[in-house]
Length: 157
Image 1: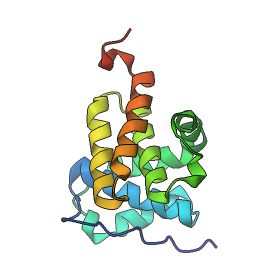
Image 2: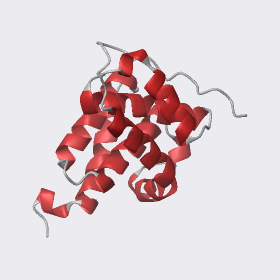
Image 3: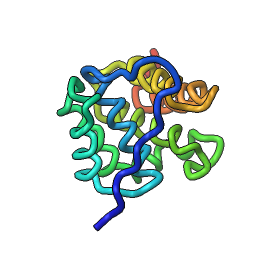
């Protein structure tokens, strides 16, 4: 049997965003961060997130989509992100790594969400959970990825 899923970092400021899709991102981020530190299955991560009282108003379907999507496509997402980072993903803070995976998944698979929305959501989570200037790094990497994946949104093509 695998180890229990580790509790994610607590937010640095403000109340956690736990409603709707923002809540789903919040819960998925906690679980992706946890599994980077203490590997677990997508099913274990989903069950842990769905059991969280503070996520009861989150979009649970989207939460499951994010968790399973990131877990199933982690290698491909990391392959996309690696050339855009100034250091190896393993050298990143686990929270930054988790935020980049989540943002990359949404940029790849949520075409109905504008890239700016995906990036802004990741930046806001980075401001809440990440290192002091981690949000700037997240913004830069995801912006470069979005320009590659969605050139029409940036006026290219």
